[in-house]
Image (cartoon, rainbow, N blue to C red; front, side, top):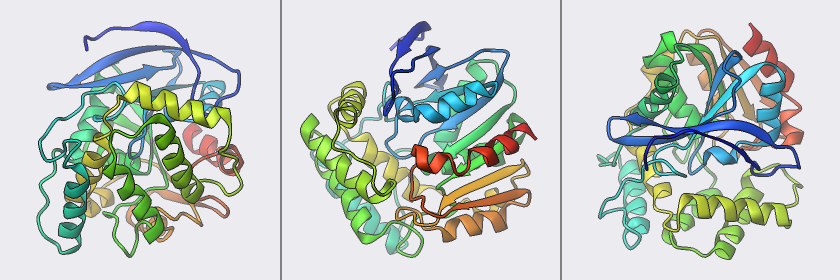
Length: 326
């Protein structure tokens, strides 16, 4: 895929009828191509949003993008490597025939404290994110990361502090997920099931996503809608038929070095937002992050799980705006 920019209108996942204008293009981190979207305008305050496990740039909710634009921010989103239109990493161990067994073996090795050979690390993915800022000639930006994106963002904030205006962590952790601080058994099983069938049909992906979102999303959100089906279809077709990147990203989390010392070094003003009922990354992780990052504020949202649906976002959007405007 060659580097280019286009002006386009596109419907965001889980949207209503509103449309945004934006530019898209490709940044390079050595030989890795990172596809990004820049909502502009260029004279607004830039904020880099870092997606979580398996998430694409189109999966950021419209209400968050709209909120940032309305408050004179310039949202910049991108596909992590192995998702969307960014580079896919090919390897025999993570081929469609082997990926399920490879991920399970790596989980076992992680729990036994044995070395894990991952295709890349969280640090490598942080380099991808910084390449987007460099490509756009942005010296300094606000950085917001969710879930695995928060882990990536921790490396950005600790390794590239001069590039970070403020730092926001949503539903994330400083530690590698384990039975003590990570997913419930049911959620872990659902995530593992995704790696076992990388060539699932659209209907199978929709049903699989419903089961996962029912566990980690806001209770009571209706997923039996045409909009939800279309959002999964668009993501699946955009990302390609072979869904092996999800397993490589899981292994990158398990195989990355301990981040605790790096997290302790973060000096950017930091807002930590976490759901009290998060079944994927337990809320104790937020309290630990708050204790590790010196200049941090903690916001626990009572009925939030892992995602930022409208009923959740309305509970912390004022805190986010105050934080970003400091």
